[in-house]
Image (cartoon, rainbow, N blue to C red; front, side, top):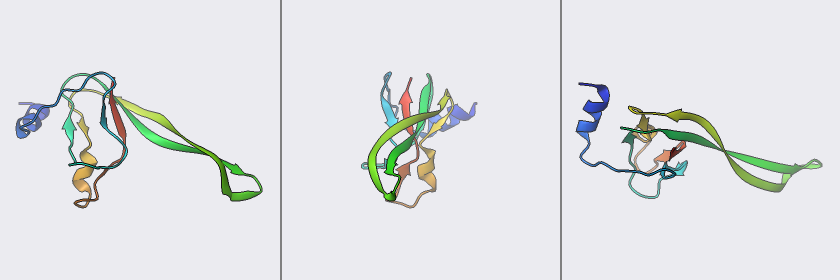
Length: 102
């Protein structure tokens, strides 16, 4: 029996996501935290990168700020998604990456 099969047998709920669906969003979790085992397909893992334009004469003054998502990797079957919540204190869970279905 494979590692993925063993993990899958521990879960009582299956969820199906479609192309473009966000599975986890970087930041605090507003609802009940979940982690997932990717059974089939591919997902893109991204990290938020904040780009700031600062005043060259006053480094504390920000002229403009915007968010960019940087792709870290693409993951496939057997990968755990959101497992970082297992190591975080209760009620302080947060996802460290945005994971989207490819």
